Length: 473
Image (cartoon, rainbow, N blue to C red; front, side, top):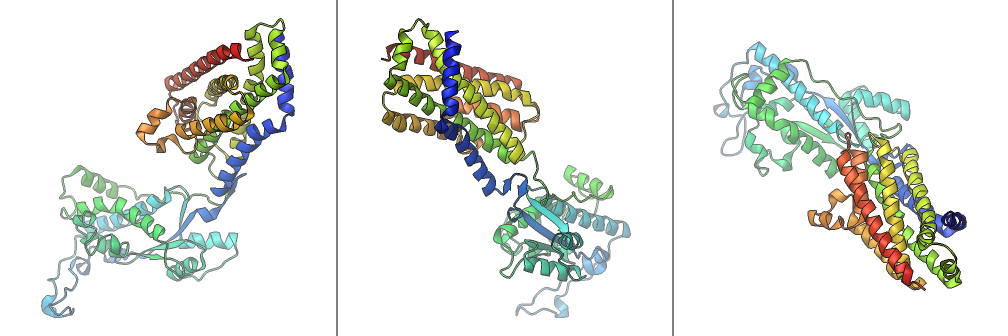
């Protein structure tokens, strides 16, 4: 009974303490909101300046694919570097059979669609045809563009309505057809990276200064992801002559239904509620500020020691265990409320996911709060002055947060650092949260182990704090 009376009294004092509310609630909320604003996502507002908008123009000359002109090698230069001398022209090649021409036309279109889909699959990238951009911009801004696709695409890129325009030129598939697989191994060749994407008949249009280098690299990477298989199979001979499994798959894919374009990402509406960025950020800052409870507890014990109330409680007819529980339970309750509120804010303001099994958050929240409260008790019995709270307790909390991966995702830490971080309760809490929020099928054994380790930390910290409490004057 005595423990609950002490708990109720201390809980009322904590709720009235504005400094406690500021450190445990307002400060982590401010950090998370700032992160939300800098990433362009806050209260379901999306900053489209952080998105990459690409228009696509299809000018591929499908009719000429496989024709005699298509199959004839281009003019080669004489020793003086001039072209056009008839003796340097390659011998004409016969056109491909109609069945093979149809195959290559389908292959050309499928290749273009897969490149577009590859770009579209990246988070924050919106790829549309010029006609669709024309309709969308007319609805959003009332902007109208000329009918010609290439002219309209050029104007869109120049005005900044789109970040870049990717033009698949008439000779796109012809250039792909003539590529050697060695191009992808020797970037210094004439058709190497320095000349891409123009080397394969893809023009990239941008504003007055041309397309951004990062946009060009993004487009080149998308091409490099899709072209090698087509080039390798084409250089193996005419259709069907390659026995490799990949070429067989490519042939079956091309002979089947045409590949469909992926639906474009909606960059103007509410952002994706499954945004993994906040599934890392919110738990990280929540765990870091949960352990700021150490400072609050240390100052609370120090204040009561200076006032003499702690000494009077110790001489009262109250068992030491009841006294310790009465002094620590209020902070445990505050920690539970703090964590629950921050996860609720993450859900409401940032649309973060609570994972496939949200109920699993409860044992992790409870065990993390137990570890933080017990650590606070241990530190409170070691600290003797307010200067020590500022110098040692605060530094320890920040160092532990840095080591464990609260400042950045744990998966970004070097392997050695990840192993070292397991010596902190923070790391085990982050591992559990990551498994719950980011894994579609949470590993119950892993989460149970994390909770067990956190409870073990709590028991050890509480035992050390209880031993020290006996010697505190």
